[in-house]
Length: 118
Image 1: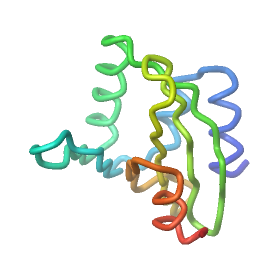
Image 2: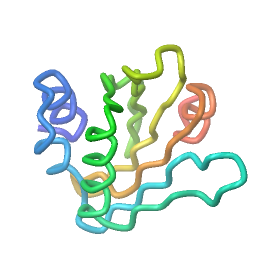
Image 3: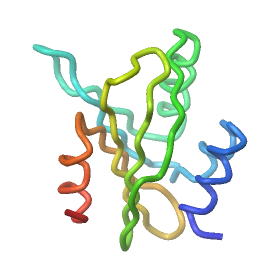
Image 4: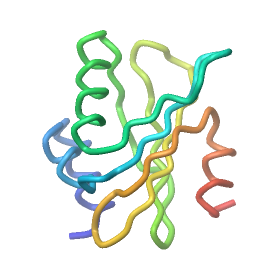
């Protein structure tokens, strides 16, 4: 089963552990910085897990949906529950059946360009 298929199944079941399982142990996540702040970076699976758990504890949940796929890349629309209408997409870079990089993008257009799908 491909990473995209695994993620779709995990998203449909809201299966947090499967979402984490597709991450490479050395995954890098570059988040969107707040104005005037440096870009938050997670540098491994444990840090990404901690960040996801923090967001969940803060009531920041999402309904992720894969909106595009290409060779080695997946674009996910996050559909933030706490901030309807806020546009957040993630570009996932895939290598050897693992997500090795997550890049937050403020808009679908910028995510599609970053993923090389526009």
